[in-house]
Image (spheres, rainbow, N blue to C red):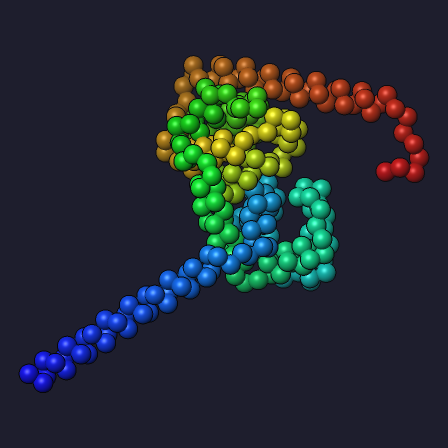
Length: 260
């Protein structure tokens, strides 16, 4: 009888030790998710659409090699990004430098992107692959009147060739980075096209969901190419006209010396 009681006591102690350990783990997870990593959060919002840290080149170079740069040199390069990401204080620059040269940079950015994903999910309708496909193909018009993505981009077997093929984009960029890139693209042509007709956050979420599932993308047929080719030629013509207009506008004003 004494042995049975002793065995029961040992099992009880083991059980409550495990419960306590799980509780402590939960508290640690809560602490990491409530802590705001400002540098990683800002990177996820402003930089992840163009740059990875160890994930390969996007529209901008992979920033992993900057880990070995002198801090002063990296700080100078970060400062040069102001025209694209907005004003940066010295504290902002220092935080970016510390982030990029941290051995845990990828992990920190991943956590920031996951938290951003949850925040987006809490304020918008759930991401819809079918809604994203309709927006991409132009079956559903973009809310602010921008041109359909398929005019310039290919996804699966369909699309234009003016911009890069997006079929394998999901292998190089997570959904949050995709959403950021869709809304704040750094491609010169797209930034000019959507500056006054921005893609909404909800549309970006749907488009990112569609681009994350290439196995559901349609294949091409000869009939599919005709309307896409016409739209692409129309887009090219528009860009040519805009370019000529800008060139003519610049030539209408005499260039002053001493002004860059």
